[in-house]
Length: 257
Image (tube, helix red, strand yellow):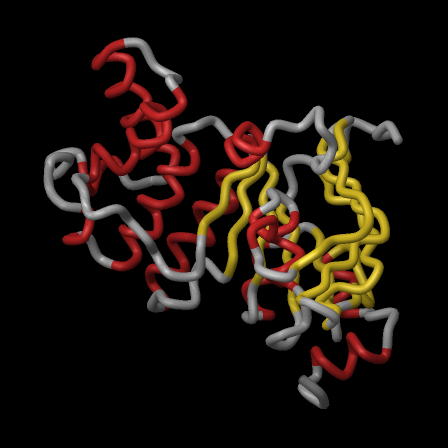
């Protein structure tokens, strides 16, 4: 099934995911646009994170988990033999809820992926890539004199931007973010949101968030998950001001969820 327009990065059709016999996703179909920020909202346990993890096959190793449906990245179905899983996870990187820097130096955290994948030639090339990634993550000025220090000594906000830099260092096309600000204070959250706005110029961003105000601030498109179903998806401004589903309206107004 070819992608019909270059503006579509992911085309998801009939995606269901089961933990044993329990369905976490039910027949989700949606197009996710290239170089936009898509926010996924909804109550806990509604399938948002499961959906996100299906996009780079992080759900593959879940015990007793199985998937139905199709996920197309550009022109390739990601579960087909033509898709190399290692390359998929390079192209579709992920930032997790809690910052998870390696217990290594700041430099080695960012250099890890390029070293493993053989993306650089020599120390100078690697150093240039590390600097470029840290600049993209708006962290270079804060850590340029601390590159040999342990990443665990950074603040939580700095650690999360370091994790973003680590993803950017392997030149992804898509960045998945699972509640990237939930562990951060308001100032650090603002820095991450400003960073998202910068990154969308080069990358496709798909974020899971419980913070509806954050979705309204940063996202081009928003989808509401409810009991494993994507009940509404569209332009963020329209979804928040003129929801087309009573479930969406009730969730946004706090009547349910």
